[in-house]
Length: 323
Ligand code: ACO
View 1 (tube, protein in one colour):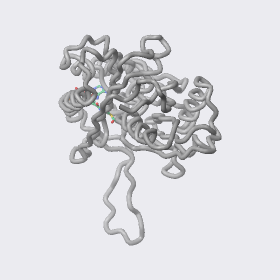
View 2 (tube, protein in one colour):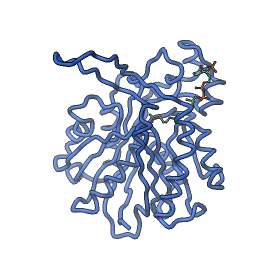
View 3 (cartoon, protein in one colour):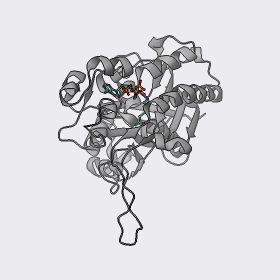
View 4 (cartoon, rainbow, N blue to C red):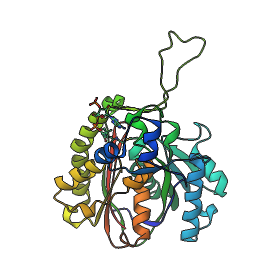
């Protein structure tokens, strides 16, 4: 077992909130359809900020909360599918903005599994000579959304959240995990394609920068594969489902969360949700949920917590932590 501590959590949501009702004025939809299919009532949408701004705010809060100086960080990982740019990475922008002069920084692309994949990479780094780092999920998905397309525009929101992790002598940390990728199913959720327009290219096939997903297929995938991956993580951790205090799942759809709780015979209050307020924020969603629960006192040291991400790639990741 890796001896790792989640020292602090933090979150940043854009101030501007957009309700389902407001969306019904700009596209053919309604609160009833959106809420009954997804559990979403509203989402936060940026007006001026970009992904690095949200992530930088989270990083500053993490340092403030833990009383740690930026130059004692060894690394910064930002999981995102909506970076400001491909270069510099969002993580490098955060590193520069907070003056983390001794930290290396890089982005990680695993869509809605980004937070769990990021924690996995951080765990590996902390088992070597590194001592302390940030893992932040940050998304401005509103820039990837086609606002004419009601099948995706109603689902997503913007936001960022993360944790500061460090090595510890306490007997806590990551107990077990299972990460899986299903690249053969990747076409079911695409966003951010670029066209190759070089002068030597053959016929340029049209690409679309916006989100497209086969919602039904992804729904079926999630309800089928996530329980299997979570079960494998529980077995790796040697933890019984009953002994997990909270399951923090990626917040894509309330019906997916309820279905997974049922599969494990667990009460739904062990599977908290916040997609009603935030929508689907991809790599940010699990961190947002974690920080809200820490703030309310529901999640605290001594508990066993499961983090479960799933989404684009397609990807799935489940981890069991003693925090
Ligand atoms: N408002 C009103 N009607 C709508 C809307 C809308 N916003 N969107 C679609 N509809 C209509 C459709 O046109 C369709 O009408 P039709 O039957 O006349 O053709 C009808 O509603 C049903 O559409 P479906 O797409 O079949 O609806 P479904 O019940 O599958 O729900 C949803 C769609 C919510 C997207 C669901 O499939 C889902 O949640 N899938 C999983 C998404 C997910 O988990 N993604 C992974 C993470 S995302 C990431 O990695 C970034």
